[in-house]
Length: 156
Image 1 (cartoon, rainbow, N blue to C red):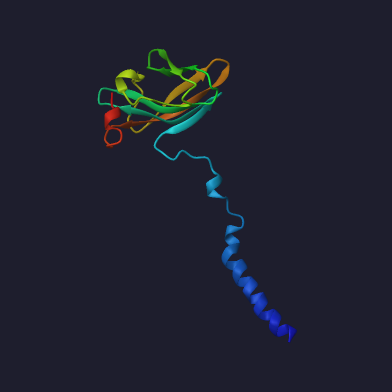
Image 2: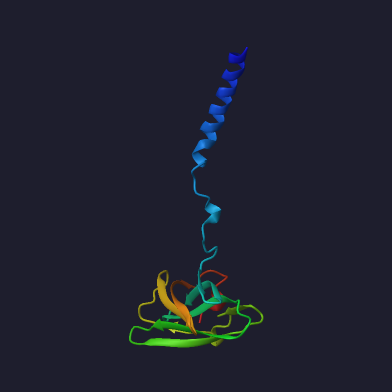
């Protein structure tokens, strides 16, 4: 009687282990850090830079678009630095402490317009972000054009 009970039980355990065993050692994909949009992200001290993009036009200029979350509660002057090919330019953005989330680049005329000979649509362009004593971060920012409807108003 005991043998009749153990055989189906062993068979059931083998089937369950065989069909689910391959996922026992699999990495959980939801624990991986990723950027859920076209842009990239970085952390610089108390600032969280999110969805950083360069939206370019046909003249070789690009509008820097990003959202900045200021976790410090006070205003921070963020330096944005990039190479034009001949010189290195630095622009400063004033990041208010309140509201804690600020969007830049929605109005191209008021934002940072990058013009560099090495910037290509579809490529990555290096931009350095830093402020105060916080260690800076070099970010390779995607360069997109205004072909998509969500970006057409962001073209410089």
